[in-house]
Structures are given as C-alpha cells and as structure tokens.
Length: 144
Image (cartoon, rainbow, N blue to C red; front, side, top):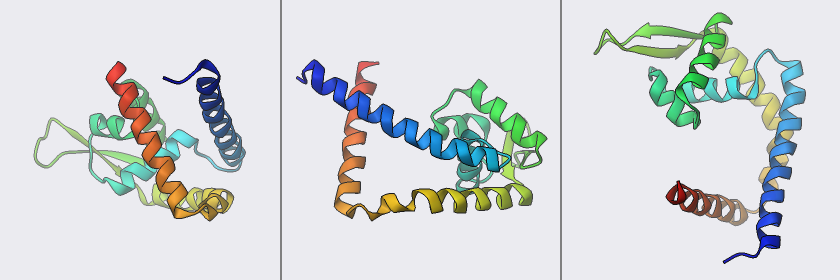
C-alpha cells in the first residue's frame, strides 16, 4: 500500500500536468471560438459520426446533461447539427458541419504545435504512462 507522501506526490503530479494543459489550452481558447470541451466533442463526433447524445457523453466521460449543454452551444454556433436517425425516427444523431470541421482542424493544428514536443518522449515511456493510467482507472472504478 502506498504511503501518504507517495499518494500526495502522485496527486500533485496529476494536478500539475492538468494545470499545464489547462493553461496551454486556455490561451488557445482566447484565440479560438471554442473551448477545450467543445474541441473534445467535435473531435469525437468527427471520429464517431452519427452517434447519439448518450454515446457521446460516454465517449467524453461526462454526464448527459453536461454533454447536452455543450452540444447546444455547438449547434447554436453552427458547428454541429442534430438529425433524425434513419433507423429509429425517435432518436437524434449528431453530425459535425463543414464549419465545425474547419474549426476543429484549425484548433487541432494549433494544439499540436503547442504539445507536439511531448511526443519527443520515447514510445516506451508513453506506452508505460498510458498503461499505468489505465491500471489506476481500473482500480478506482472498482472502488466506486
């Protein structure tokens, strides 16, 4: 079992990384018309076209009401459209508009120009980091 100091170091490290990402992207948000969360939603919808709100919320690791609010703002900005599902007329599907694709591409390129230096890490280190994160998430999910 980890000692308090070790746990503190782990949580502190996560917080520092999270804050660095936030500061880096917040600067971009001032330059762009979308937020980090809106960028995440656009990227997921591009990767998974024609999904519904519940599936989007799951892929974003957010609640349905939070996801719905983000989608509402993207629809209002004409970056996303809601459409009826061809297989089930009661269901809605979400699609990224051409304008949404353009905005996502611009923000993605700006984001990559700022974070691509992280990819200078050895592939093995990146794989280990992702593996350890996955293990930690599994253990935390069991505690829920």
